[in-house]
Length: 216
Length: 216
Image (cartoon, each protein chain N blue to C red):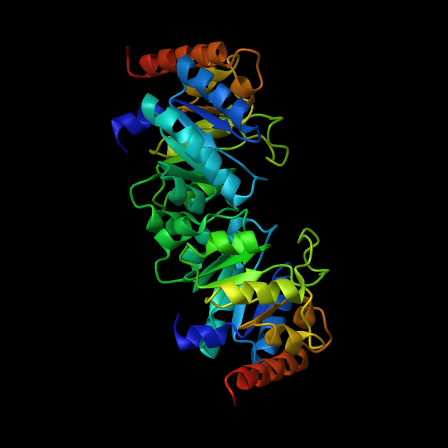
């Protein structure tokens, strides 16, 4: 993975389930605040609407040099020319995604050390330990992993770890300290009054944490 | 479209929402009875399960020389190596499907003469006027078109028309007489005690109707 791609993962917004205008507003605010990667997750939209929404979002991200990752749907990623696909354990197997998107960013959610171990054989660019903490934005997310499991994952995995689930400005530094390369957030940016300020705060924590790790 | 592909459309089974064993049982019976094309439509399955189901179904169809069409999902079709994709008006636009599946069978549902006219500019292999009659298997299918509209569609369209919705052994001959090249059925095969016998009856009607049209 390139240095640019690794940097993109440092502050990663997952967004979906909004109408078009709300989505674009929160994306714009998040980009201004320092989000470097956006995943579009739409679990109830029809295919045509999902593609159209991704197509509306994409130019803004391109202009900001920020990759667009599509959740689950290789077809939507192919149709809109997205930069990557993020899959969960129930989504399309990674090797099938990779076959049709050889140069894309491909991420995989892992809910246990076993899933991480199984994933290490695959052509994955990053793993999202999920859910790290309890979360309101994905009711079916399962039992939280916690920081101890994240540390254990770090110890056995050289690829980027970008946990998701309940991460906010209050715990982000601890998440980086436990070994995360980046943080993926939903509610901490989408569910607040000022998504730009929230992104900016999280970006500052991410910068400081990366600096601390690299001896800066 | 090749003669073989056109023949395949004559009796076209749309199936989904069953468990794996029930799906394979009904598909086997339908193939024995004379179904020549199968569309897998799964609106609630996760991507991984949808792909796995298609992969289980595909070898049986290949062995019978019967194409597998995937409803809506280009990604699933790419992943399993299906023969085609069928899209509705809210699914992925046809040109996007075609770009990634240049040689596949691509079908489009049309719910009005206007939708048919708009579709004629696209690289579509066949149209499915839908719903032709009232149907129980797709509650959101809209207002039935009826045979008069099917005749009007026939008059302005040279490509194959394979209507769907409420077609059964009682009305199939009238559907062919109104200009259909094939009939797509769900309940008339999936929802009966003997799917093989039901398929066989429909296949006989389709053969007789094609014979009548070609002066045989």
